Image (tube, rainbow, N blue to C red; front, top):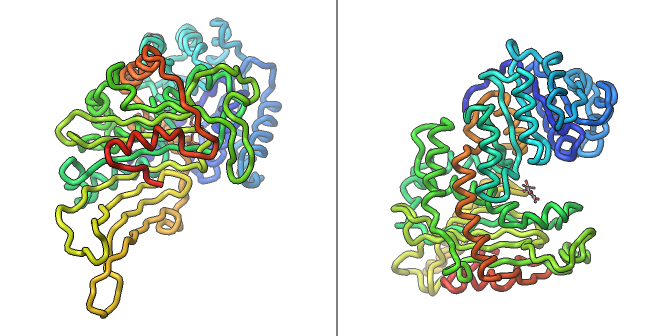
Length: 488
Ligand code: BG6
């Protein structure tokens, strides 16, 4: 994690004219340039099937930055950045066309980092095309985006194809949540602070909540989303990844091997949710029309391109249990949805109530401490605790207060980078710690497939919730049954 030496890399983006490349990758690369984080020799090669020249591709990159960078383009930085860009026209389904790569790249002297920003059905073609063109060697890297399959068999199929050409340590599977500053801060919080290391278990923690809500709806990708659903789109990856960081045992060090192996143990210890308990452990929801920030928005079935009989979920709430020594009896409640009242990603660690209360004048029952970790929009950590209200009137009066560590306030001079920027940089540095191993992804699918199949066998269809709310009432009931409530 501390390796800061760059080697000359050629970052080859397959699908360079696509949405992901234009909206995210080029913008992130420009930002890295701006902060002098790209090694001087790094080159960026866009690959796609349309007939573009180097010049026209550079023009497309400029237009993308104008559209998606939320500040002005700095001319000096752009000049430097645009000199790194070139374009190759390759029909990715035609193996012989990959030979062109050999004419542009120099895999003996430079590291080839291949970014698959394309639909998964092309992964196989690309792996085989690269292999047959002779450009792959032990230094070559492959970056893959989710979805890596839609269930265990399809994920295995993709991973098998990749494994024919690349060793596991050459493969960088991205979950952009792992590049978010606060997810990484979990490692620091948990393993560098004794107040947390010693209290991070069933003795002191009552339960943990993970919330990932987005006020946006489906944003023109109804067809993709409808085949996927919120369970596979968000929970299988982002929420389970957060869960592993919260729940894992202390790794021996920060190496990819140590971190991956601890995360896998958590995923393996997740208690299966099956037809027998799916109704009491999960809630499926689908948004109907409603209001977000006072503005009327359509329901999921009224979105452009919608199939009006769809039963795909846009909201999921789950009670997960981790069957190991540390977490026995501590539920992890996770919820994620589209069209929630606002964008909010947070982890709330609820500590146990104290066994006896000597401050009955202030509270009949003492509220328990909480640690709230905000991932977005405002990164930071808060501890909810009780303090005495200053005064000399004889009574001790307590008040609920918070210790607030907002990152933007505390680290005023540090820029907080986005997940993609961090991860692209780590891939260029050759550090796989923040990427997912094959086993992690497959283990996550095992748990998710069981829920998906239980929903379908028990014919559990989503309950409607109005856009602008935190899901169906059943989500409240999920916690209320255990005598708890969501953090609001
Ligand atoms: C993506 C999902 O992985 O994450 C999208 O496919 C979702 O549906 C997005 O909107 C959320 O990412 P972020 O970083 O905005 O929370």
